[in-house]
Amino acid sequence: MLKGPFSLRLLVAPVLFAGLLLFTSALRAADPESATSRPNDDSGYSEIATFARAVELIRQDYVDGQKVSYHDLIYAAMKGMLNSLDPHSQFMDPSDFKDMQDDTRSRFNGLGVEVAIKEGVLTVVTPMEDTPAAKAGIQAGDEILKINGVSTEKMNLQGAVDTLRGEPGQKINLTILRPSTKEIKEYALERKEIKVASVKGGKLLDSALTGPFKVGYVRIVQFNEPTAEDFARVLDDLQKQGMQALVLDLRNNPGGLLNSAVDVLGQFLPPNTRVVSTQGRASSQKHDYSTPVGLKERSRFPLVVLVNEGSASGAEIVAGALKDLRRAVVVGETTFGKGSVQNVMQLPDGSALRFTTAKYYTPSMTVIQGNGVVPNILVPLTPDQDRAVSALRNNDKVEAPESVETVKSKDLQLVRALDALKGVMIYAQQTAPQLNAVKK
Image 1 (cartoon, one colour):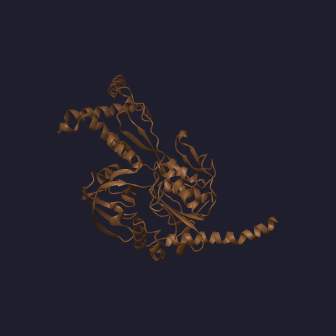
Image 2 (cartoon, one colour):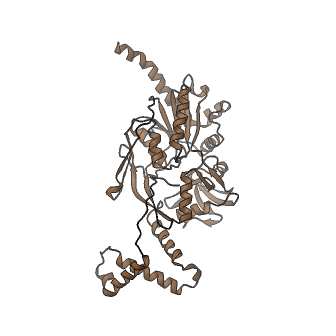
Image 3 (cartoon, rainbow, N blue to C red):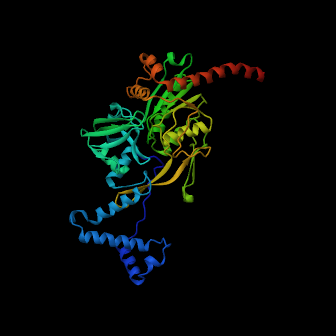
């Protein structure tokens, strides 16, 4: 899953790789001391020549001739090069690149689990709702020790994703360590075609939860191409029903497209409001992202955003901006802390490079990477409570009248969010007559 601005730009490759190798070889022949006489030189000529020599030696003498095509060797080298940079950078062959594009369009085959490398360990960012992983009970923060009995200790992120994905109906076994309880569990799962509805819920909560107020509830599961439009339609419907306040649930939202997250923020903030910025080594990576113009103007209803450890990237951008700009109260747990920007650049053969170019900053210039977004109201859940909330969400029972008592007893984060909203609305009702009296 792409977590950052999704930009496709065609890289202009050297005209002929072989020609470049011949050129560097000729250069070294003319100046045999070049590799050692200029230790601080980073022009790349000598290193490319060394690389070319290594490739030719492998092709010439490696025991298995089926493994030494230029295609296989160069692809392997690019994978190693990108993997050496950071856990989020990777080389994608044409098939991997197509899978990534399918992700942004809300469809792929697999288990429905978003993963990342965290402190060197393959870690579950979040299990996506209504997927095999979520239904099996896998939780955000779980560490994947083995996939089909193979240790993940030396597995890079793309290798792990490739192993987790596959044709629908195929079986896969995961060995998982749950840090919160120190339990090691075995899960036998079956891959399925995953179709993710990015906006779910979208109903007024039962009055047994909200009292005399009409409070809307919407979940954004992840930020994809249709998310902003779908979300706007849901808000239109809720406002037609008389919604007075809203709970926006971003728990276990792993992020997605940056532009989609920014467009969602446009539903709550004035046009041209800076909501996130990026800064990198190159000046070209310094950008401010602002809410779009021309969107329907909405009333400034009270807003609470729910987050947890599984809220990452785009979800952190939305929560961080609404918190910093004092447009919402953020309730829940500190978010994942995935705040780096990856650009995706397509290569001429259909493969692509995905590498980190910058970091995200909230409007107050707080770094998200490694820190996450800290809620205004901290409501930690025990592992049992977290499982109960996941079960409610996966079964779409949050809005059902018959589940009100269950929600009250199990989803403490939602209960605290509603308490905060009701407090704001009661205060507004009490101060409105005083303000009117002053105006007169």
